[in-house]
Image (cartoon, rainbow, N blue to C red; front, side, top):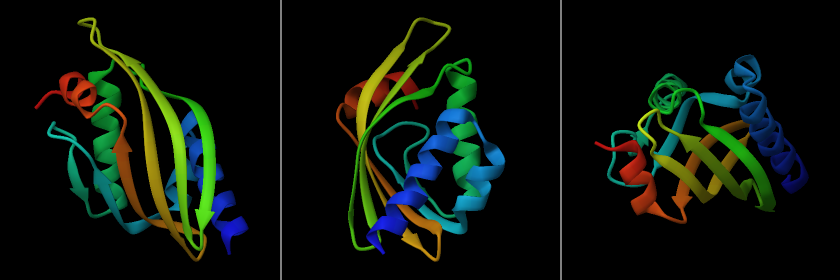
Amino acid sequence: METQSIQVVHDFLTAVQQGNQAKLAAIIHPNIQWNQPGNNRFSGTKKSSGEVFQMVGGMFQSSDNSLALTEIKTLTANGNQVACLVHWKAVQPSGGILDVDNIDVYTVENGKIVQATVYSADIAQEDNFWLK
């Protein structure tokens, strides 16, 4: 189970890096629960793949399409949950910079991600970058 869960999350993160929307849509469960940290316009719980894609689309728009998952540092599993240490970078047209590590915890069931909880190493930086 752990090996399969790690593979699903690895495939997901690789699709994020490549911008492979079809692959992302195939891996994310339609009723995913996505918990985004902070106190900014993208924070809170998303309750469907549509809400997750809407959030990510807004992030790309507000970062002038510069948002990038630049590094997948660690993937480790406990049963069907996979914790990942990843690094994100983005630059806003106004000069704002996002350069932050996140720990994401994904729950995998039947080959799909059904839950995601994101933890930021610098939530103040994220809140300042994403604004209200």
